[in-house]
Length: 103
Image 1: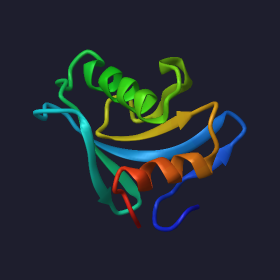
Image 2: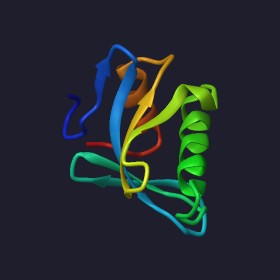
Image 3: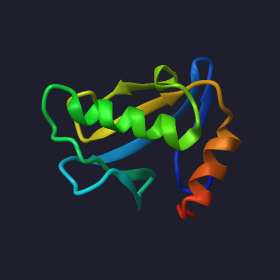
């Protein structure tokens, strides 16, 4: 656990929780909500479009492949558990801090 955010290293990668706000004007980080990162996505919440938009955004943010980002819980819920592989928990924290997400 790092600060208030629940960022954990597990065997399959780094896990953290996001709160997704679909249908926004643009896809971007929107701050912290409790122990979650709030992410606005431009895609609507239908047929997996918001999840796809989210995973593509997170992959680009961390400079990793889209296949290295997965939604491990909350596929149909705005609160999602993500897993990113190929990077460390420290890199996740550093990236969020560089984007203005401080906690």
